Length: 67
Image 1 (tube, one colour):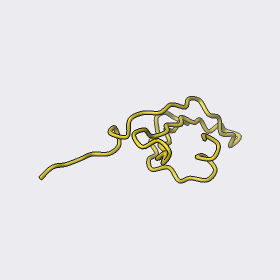
Image 2 (image 1 turned 45 degrees about the vertical axis):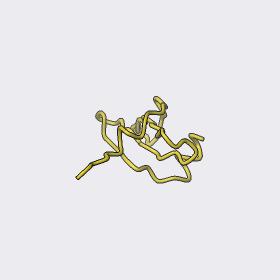
Image 3 (image 1 turned 60 degrees about the vertical axis):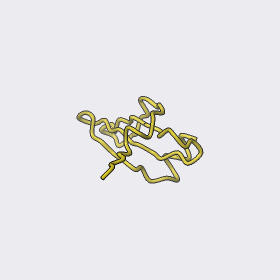
């Protein structure tokens, strides 16, 4: 699941969380109510390390406004 998300999918959100760390958010179509969060670090030698992986409610990303 994580590998296919990183290689085959485009993140729906990217946030810089530190000097060389980023939070990638992927929409998981097989999980209707959760997104996949992947925290990565990009090292000086262009190596990408996965630091943390977790799922969280899509409500955090999706906003529902009522008129």
